[in-house]
Length: 341
Ligand code: ATP
Image 1 (cartoon, rainbow, N blue to C red):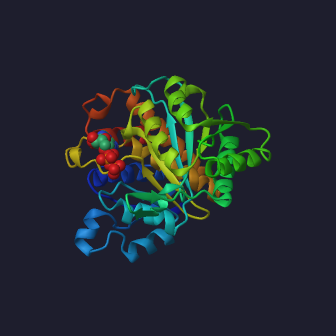
Image 2: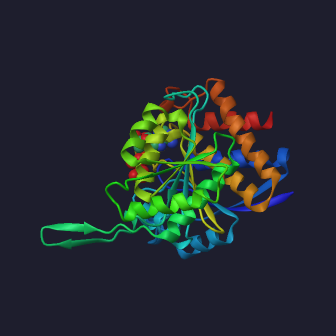
Image 3: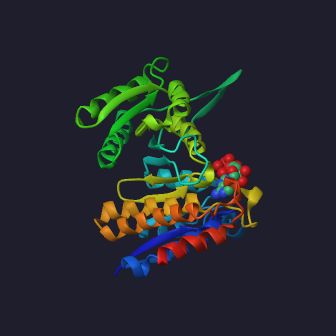
């Protein structure tokens, strides 16, 4: 039996509720797939800062670095001190945000299945803002190195997918001629090394419109940090909203998996949180472990989680955000039953 060490950030708000469901679901894979997980708590976030004075204590960082993967629930106001810092420290350059229609979940169309590959390290998110008399200037960085790395990731992902196998580079090179011009040029260059994958480009405003007009036509979208941030929230809404949107932050040797949504303090502690985003995040983590460790059991576990979530939704269980009345733990228990049965 293979054992994987998973650093777990329980998070704030609804974090503990969805974390406990996800750990129970991962544990349920043990007997069926010969897979064992050793969960290593890595306290981080608002609650941790109140208790210890630090949102990301060095001991938690070591736990994350020493584990096979990190499963993170959302944190509250300390996101900049935790996940933004972790992305930089561990050089998690690719933010992967899939959007796929789920059974019995309100979706703009039933056949949506695309992934946004968002560059995670530069653009406007380095926080370089400078005041001058009468205003503020914000610096936006686009480098050849980061653009090439993210474009390669997108093409390699398109090669592994069962879809139409095409990559769309999204930018605004008609206005930002130098910065987005470089991103566009590098994507074109990388496309020449992946001739079995279709390649096209779209301006970000047109992409925002077409995601609503014809979302079923997209496969892999590669874009810079801020456009990816904005488009992926739009994309989540197309297939049921934040409660069902998973994501991954991938680096050369480490990765952190987290739902797209925040700590949702408005519904915390009430059993109202939808655990689907966190469970699909677990599936992404297992797919990454399968790919990087060459372990078919992890791939099997990932697809079992996806099937169990679908079966639970098909059975009529839904949390309030999707128009249902199930609690977080009822939904989680049904997923575990499907995994065991
Ligand atoms: P952040 O800035 O940290 O992303 P936010 O306040 O913008 O946080 P969320 O915390 O994600 O956003 O919450 C936005 C809305 O979506 C809230 O009304 C929240 O209740 C709802 N929401 C978010 N996640 C879930 C979930 N898993 N289940 C049900 N509702 C959710």
